[in-house]
Image (cartoon, rainbow, N blue to C red; front, side):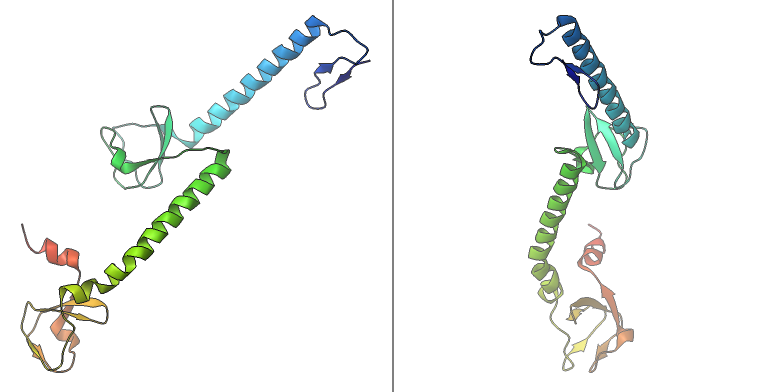
Length: 181
């Protein structure tokens, strides 16, 4: 005598029975219907987490969109207009959400490693651009010095001990912006 599966009640003929083609076909139809239902629910879930990319919209960091059948996450604010891959990272979901989480953690660790390797350069940048402040030197407006890991621009002639009112903290980016090239 046959038994039924515990989840979907598919008939399993017993060892002493001859398989009934009609019963096997019913099982195949039920399996097909169940898989289709799961697929539809999965597609609905995927559609609910992201929309199709719309060039008339502006997207910001962490927005999810579908583009050419693939899921993307926005990595730079202001993505708009025709598709520009510079703004997007393809979110692969190998292994489901656990796989996505692992991939994102891996990418974060790689970015952290890159930042750590660049830190000595970032840390030394003020001293590479300007010498350290010296109480023995006179400074005039427009001079640059490094003081305590920061870069400063002289805004009033000064000499001797550090005078906060004579200096304005700045960055390399500010210097470049001031070049007006």
